[in-house]
Length: 138
Image 1 (cartoon, helix red, strand yellow):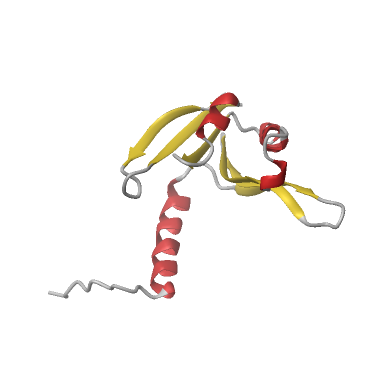
Image 2 (cartoon, rainbow, N blue to C red):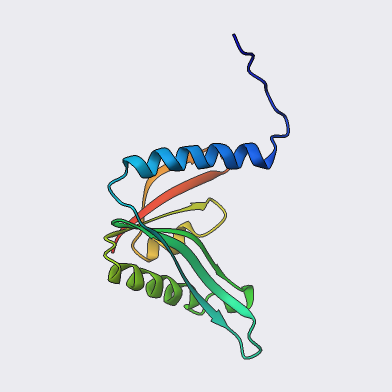
């Protein structure tokens, strides 16, 4: 019988190979065959990005990965405007819900104000914090 190896430092090629094999299996079995990136950005007069949001649309879902606003602009409704813009663009693609996650020190209250509800939380993440998985009907 072959011996299982534990790798303390897995080569990026191994991780990429495994990810590719799982993706092949998933794409062969999912009823949706298209995953499209989606993003919004705000730049200053010099062309520097000062706020943005990014994710992907997949079937009925907008999966929001990132929403960031530079510290100088926080509290000025920029995050809400970015989120609304991305949600609207996803609606136009046929999305009905949005899924995102946020950490206990990040933006849970912000997302709750935008209509998101915690569906599941992972306590003790990574040790004493929490990770919240939130959903909103678009």
